[in-house]
Amino acid sequence: MKNYLNLLTDLQNNILYLTINREEKLNALNKDTLAELHDCFIAALNDELIKGIIITGKGEKAFVAGADIKEFSDFNAEEGKNLAKEGQTKVFDLIANSKKPVIAAINGFALGGGLELAMACHIRIASQNAKLGLPEVSLGLIPGYGGTQRLTELVGKGKALEMILTADMISAEEAEKLGLINYAVSAADLLPKSTALMQKILSRSPEAIAAAIQAINAFNHSQSGYQAEIDAFGSCFSTSNFKEGVSAFLEKRKPNFR
Image 1: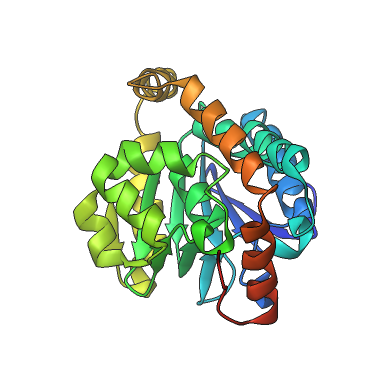
Image 2: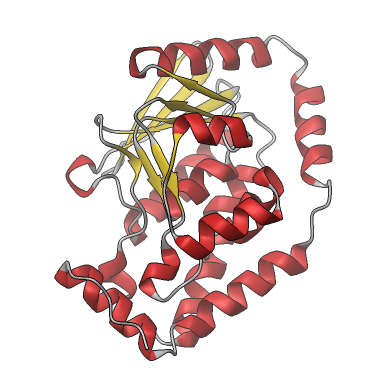
């Protein structure tokens, strides 16, 4: 694997450990990091030495604490729509449809785009200090990287509505009860547990693994739902409340929505 600015890669025993390396920014997903994730996954999917991928975040605080809001704070509706479409196509759907198994090792905050990244992975394991949520409505937005669809698939419509409409975070323990994550473990056990589970998966037929992922992804999957999210996400950018939400976030104050 080549060297990346915002990613660390480590290949051990056919498992690629992929670490998002923006600890000072709580590993937020900026444009460059998303481009590197796309490039890295394309390379990994075409590398016969790599059989499975484990994604985590650098440091002890955050897996990924969201998107880099400064980058889209002045976007219009069309730019917002393109942001969601490009991200979904090049990164989140690429991961979800990967023929090789992908595990998210959630080592801290997984918020907004960070939780959407984890949900695009096939299996999620979180440390007990992790907090998970989709806070986009507090910015005058909605999730734009598949969050409305994947959260609903994982936890059901009622809980997905509650989490998205309140913008509240939940604990790893609650996330496990809801089925949002597979396991909540101690921080020390996070990578060992993820590795052990990946090793068990990789002991099975790779063709069967790929076929199972494809078949499970086809269950109750509506492409129109993802397109509806992209359209609705884009439309939020034309509202004054989006401008207020982002301004409040950047100024570290409470938003005054109208």
